[in-house]
Length: 71
Image (cartoon, rainbow, N blue to C red):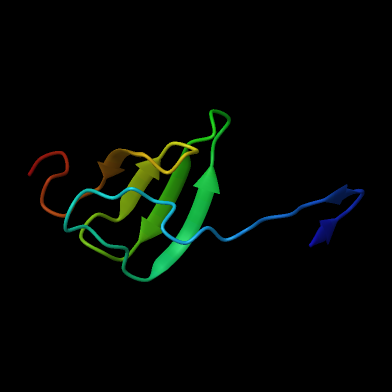
């Protein structure tokens, strides 16, 4: 893929993510990275937002149904 003067390259690495036992992605809807190379994966599973470091190590999960503020 080329965008402007920059060439963007990527490679799919099967099994890159190191999920907690029993967790799985369900219909991944988006992936983003921040300035510290953390990778945010939004999916429609039990754990909608899952965060990894650049090596695929699980860091955190957000917005777990029934566990948000006020619940």
